[in-house]
Length: 509
Image 1 (cartoon, rainbow, N blue to C red):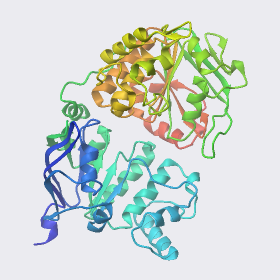
Image 2 (cartoon, rainbow, N blue to C red):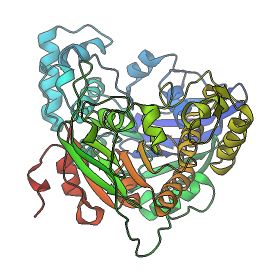
Image 3 (cartoon, helix red, strand yellow):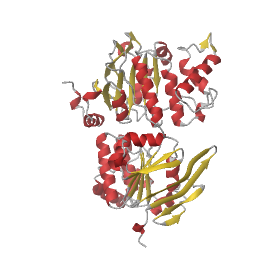
Image 4 (tube, rainbow, N blue to C red):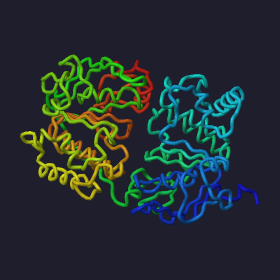
């Protein structure tokens, strides 16, 4: 029988256990040739485990995988690629000091002469409208261009199934459209696509079918075009989704955080410093900073938090007091709390208990250290409050930070800073890796903090998050910040152009 009469991929009763966790529980679904099939679920729902078994990174404990109607055992990724399964991972595995061509060559199973490989790369790029110079060094490329390397590498194998894991999390809206054009073209040629994303409006726009996982089990298979983003989110979390509640006619107070011509020096070889950044955040206001990853967001947060100390006291002021030369501890005493993007090792120490991690940032504001001695009772009590109010799944304040899942650690870190009631809060990627329900709770906590008079800066790559949460918005590109404007004044297209570096339209009229 012709292979196309079968499903391209079929999973039957796939089960996978880890110690204390049933990651996949009797999961069955199929993907047809030429179908764009979404795989949805909260963090910890079992998506990544399932995809790793399809790609041969791990093996199921029970159930079977059928490929073009035939049972197969996918022993490893090389065997998966031989079948015709390609994968583009969320985190790119590229060597920054090498060229595009060299990176692609390293990822090929068979050794292909350089000239022949370059010809094939150019052919693939021309076929799918992917512009990329094979001789450019990866360090000089944007995130969108880096993703194209991974896509080209996968397409060189002529895949029958392409797995995409959160492919748009670091792209501008314009780059997302270019990616969708490529994926639709691939599907029209018969390639199946398994698409993992938390951006439900993209699922509606792109996908033919959506399989939804919750707690390792398949809970629904639906047509995204007949669903709303909300209905799919509620299937993912198994309950109602709360809207952000903002007080009507919110009035902002006086300027609280004022940044004036802030600049940082270039640190590492690939760091992007900030240059001539100025903005004001008033009491009660939430300012959003949008941008593609790697455009100076980390330098901005480090400069605001005090991890990078400046040489101009007045470059950053809180309530009129210059803090530009203060260290992190002094800035915290002045009311500034911060949450960096990297939670493991930066925002929290994995080997420390949650209570000890609370001492690291809240010791002065909440009196956890008296006469040089840690008040462990106060630390445990406060940590218990964070765990309870932010629904952190942990055994208690003595649990180590490293024992928590990524999403639960993020909830703890956000709660630890928000409940200190800072005068100014600067956060990067506040809901990175948390599920829809937890993200809604974090968003509401930020809105409530602002309503109580705090000034908040939210640095995020998620435009939906920024547009729902923020009062004003600015865009960062190559270390420079556009003027902040009310969030409602921006169109998605304009934000995308600013993220991509078209700064002409940022001038205030």
